[in-house]
Length: 211
Image 1: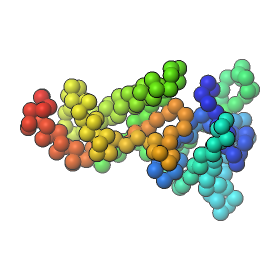
Image 2: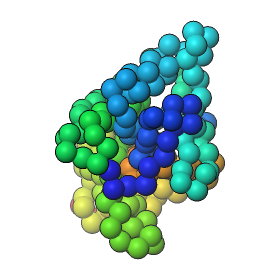
Image 3: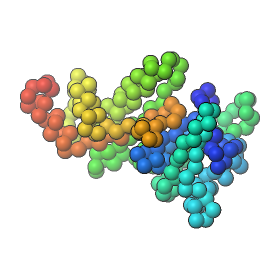
Image 4: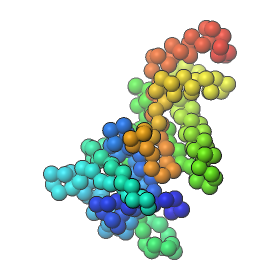
C-alpha cells in the first residue's frame, strides 16, 4: 500500500487507494482495505440500501482533508473480488476488496462497447507520471478497439484513430473535472459506432489509411 490512502468518512476503519466515478459521481471502481469486520460492514451498508439503514453515498477523505463524494447507485450492478494481505505487514491482518461495476469486465459485443483499465506505478515526477498513465491507458484502449472493431485496423493507424476517438468521445476516460480519478487506476470506455466505421472507411478511400 505505497499509494496515498483515503479513509471512508462514514466507516473510518476502511481505507481506499483508488476510486473511479462516472460523470454523475456514481461508483464504478473502488480498491479498499480494512479488517474483516470493517470491510464486511461497509459492503453490507452499500448492498442493503439507504432505506434499510445502509448508505447511498459515502465520502473519501484525503490527507489534505478534502472530501470526495461517491454515489453508490444501484448496488446490484456491483461485484467484488477480495483477498488477504500477508500478515507480515505494518498494519496487521487486512483484507483488500475491489468493488466494481460488472460492465467494466464484460464486453458488450452486440453494441461494440467495452472498458479498458490500467494501473500505473507512481515512481516518477507528476507530469511524467500523468503522461505515462495516459499512454498506458490508450495502449489498453487500442487493444480493446482491435477486439471490438468488425473491420481490420493496422498498427500504423493507431495515433490517428485514437485522436479521432478522443475527439468524438468514442474513447471516454473516467476522469472528469467534477469527479476526477482517485489513485493510480484509470478506465476508459471504448465504443465502436457506425460513425467510427465510416471514418475508417473514408480514410482508406482517401488513401490516408494504407492497407
